[in-house]
Amino acid sequence: MIKAVVGANWGDEGKGKITDMLAEKADYIVRFQGGANAGHTIVNDYGKFALHTLPSGVFYNHTTSVIGNGVALNIPILFNEIKSITDKGVPTPKIAVSDRCQIVMPYHILFDEYEEERLGKASFGSTKSGIAPFYSDKYAKIGFQVSELFDDELLEEKIPRVCAQKNVLLEHLYHKPAIDEKELLNTLHEYRDMIAPYVCDVSLMLHKALEEGKTVLLEGQLGTLKDPDHGIYPMVTSSSTLAAYGAIGAGVAPYEIKQIVTVCKAYSSAVGAGAFVSEIFGDEADELRRRGGDGGEFGATTGRPRRMGWFDCVASKYGCRMQGTTDVAFTVLDVLGYLDEIPVCVGYEIDGEVTTDFPVTSKLEKAKPVLKNLPGWKEDIRGIKNYEDLPENCRNYVEFIEQQIGYPITMVSNGPGRSDIIYRKSPLSK
Ligand code: GDP
Image (cartoon, rainbow, N blue to C red):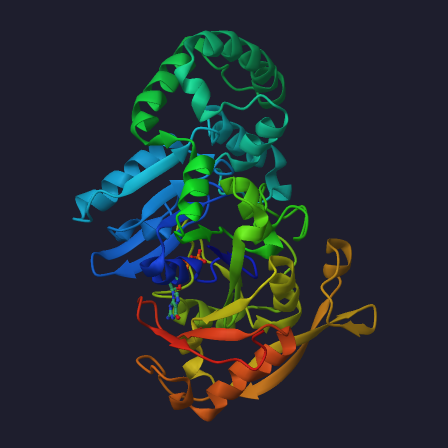
């Protein structure tokens, strides 16, 4: 069977930790979209790791880590990531990379930088990992597939064809040096040698695994609100962040996805530009940022300070619905223990009307948060293992949010470690 772990919001909900935890009972952990532009932070017995490309299950011996065809594959980053974990004593992981996966080229990263530079103040706040230029080329049908690295005849025909178009833009739009075709061919040969040991037909491998009754975990990157169709377009990422896309980005049947664990953080954070209705500022935000996550809310890939806000029931209800949530994992609840009162965003006021339905971007820009204050619990809840042992106000916070979003919170995370998890029976479970 297939389980998916995805985000309800803007990313950084703690998916890495939940995947790492569920990976204990999984055979394959698959990345199905996105690239090395975001990261997962995982704390385990080997230390603290920031992963950008490898799925979170690499720390187990029994799992195979899979890069599905939907991923934007940066080969040198994958290579260095494998090295960084084996250098710290983690056993060499089993890794499979789809032969249909496409490659982030060095010029995608340059185009990302040049475009943000050109846009200046109007930039998207891209991480400059080349993701948008990569997906643009994939759908313009001038991307390079991993399988093509092994076909020199094809590369020799394709490189000049692609470079001709790129070089016009480099010269006339960005006023930057042109791509050297020979150098590019050499780079692709290096990429081929780096990736060769891992390449396989991932879809077929997973199909056979499912037939044998194995468990496959799909690991999403970012969250619903960054989805190019259903998110806060255009301040979105360039590949779908929804569990449904897992079927495409891993090459599996959609009806095999039986469990969709949507991760929601107990407060909000976001990176990059875009509407963020429940955002807070100043000292209030600084304190939450400093206390947040595990050692502060700063980007795992970029180190950028994250924008902070109170829990947003409107965005999260929508975020869970679009994912097709069967279970909500409610994370980082321990962080809120310092507050006397905890504001929660329960509605959006748009042009004088209050709604709990998440609107399109143009309306979202006008939305003002309707806040409700819930009493805090003023206690350190780390280490608690049973839901009933949580302070009453803490349980009330969880249950209030569950009612507002309408999806069952079956897991509550009260610390960054693998075992910091409280399972809960929810009245909303089907
Ligand atoms: P992802 O991109 O969704 O995997 O999210 P991140 O990697 O940004 O994870 C959020 C941060 O919160 C990481 O530093 C995790 O170690 C940390 N974290 C996850 N769950 C919890 C939790 O329940 N409590 C605390 N304090 N930190 C957590």
